[in-house]
Length: 166
Ligand SMILES: CC(C)(COP(=O)(O)OP(=O)(O)OC[C@H]1O[C@@H](n2cnc3c(N)ncnc32)[C@H](O)[C@@H]1OP(=O)(O)O)[C@@H](O)C(=O)NCCC(=O)NCCS
Image (cartoon, rainbow, N blue to C red; front, side):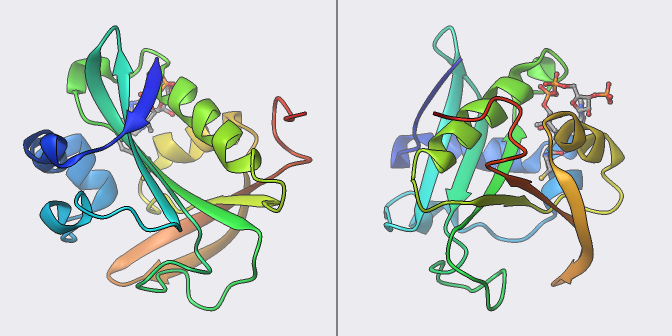
């Protein structure tokens, strides 16, 4: 499993993944404006493609919610990172790749010394994702409405990380 930066060459892949029923159910049909977003690399965001043996299988995004353009998270303190992830290729679900992707993303986020807390916001109905984050050490914080979606916010602190970084 490796994570590499997403590029404009990944446009068709990301658009196809976004239409996959298991991704659409988790992420919704919000327009992620892939065509525009893949062409820019703001300092507050990393968009990454997960590859297994050279085959792209999924997407991870790490955002600084205090600096992100749309203020999705509202008014929020410094020191957070918000992570979104999905496995795009349906045949790659349930093989442990999601766990590996999240572990890599957690390591990357906590590599910044000022980052104390990682946030994720799976939809209320996505109970498998709730279990998935729970196994990774995330704790439930609050139920929150983001646009049309009712979500559960979970957090992982440095202290709570399963394998605390050095
Ligand atoms: C959540 C997800 C990243 C986990 O990756 P994975 O490689 O499938 O998971 P792992 O093999 O590491 O771990 C297995 C666990 O993943 C979760 N999972 C597996 N398939 C899933 C699916 N179709 N949808 C949601 N979660 C799923 C479950 O928690 C599963 O454990 P369970 O047997 O207790 O239900 C992946 O399933 C996925 O991309 N789902 C769709 C998008 C999504 O829900 N993203 C997270 C919220 S935005």
